[in-house]
Image (cartoon, rainbow over all chains, first blue to last red; front, side, top):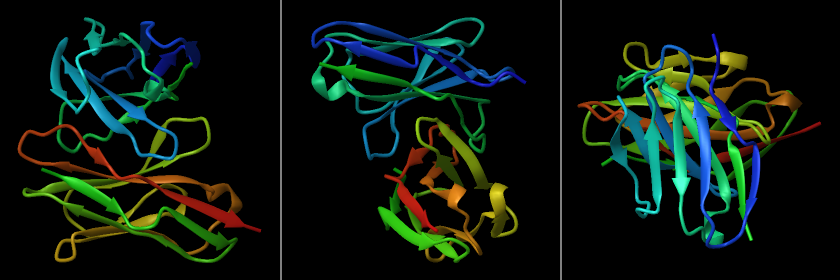
Length: 113
Length: 114
């Protein structure tokens, strides 16, 4: 069973730039969620994708966008980066059920300077 | 709306001592409850989950949690901790009725001293 993999592991960007983070979901999972985890905080829900469509969104501005592909992998795109976007970005896959636990990747550490 | 409160931001404890990490939730519908652990520079890993049935749930690494509906709590316990249990612990709630998006607490840092 292949777990959730994220790339890159670390990234440094300058304010105003754009970034794309990638995630491969665990085999058998059709739902992908993205979370932002600031230092010392819990994960904050960004959005979720199911069947290549956005299925829910947290309190994040439109410059945070995403995609899900037919193989259930996913991308998170962030435009016009701000210093406060510096965080660990976590991808999690699951099956589409209320009681389905999330399976997380190890995250991408984004630093915006 | 659903929410989670983890009452302690940091819990220091000596090795082999018991520990309890507290979690309270709020939700207007039936809930599913989870505890996750995060080791440094890693993602979150599921420790245990409550879906239905017995209110005492056993998880990995000797942890257990008890669902208390009247007190809307889901506290995590371990009778004897090890140095390797030092990590960040997150409680999460997912509501029924078609919501597939769990909400996480802010986390409790468990620090085990030798």
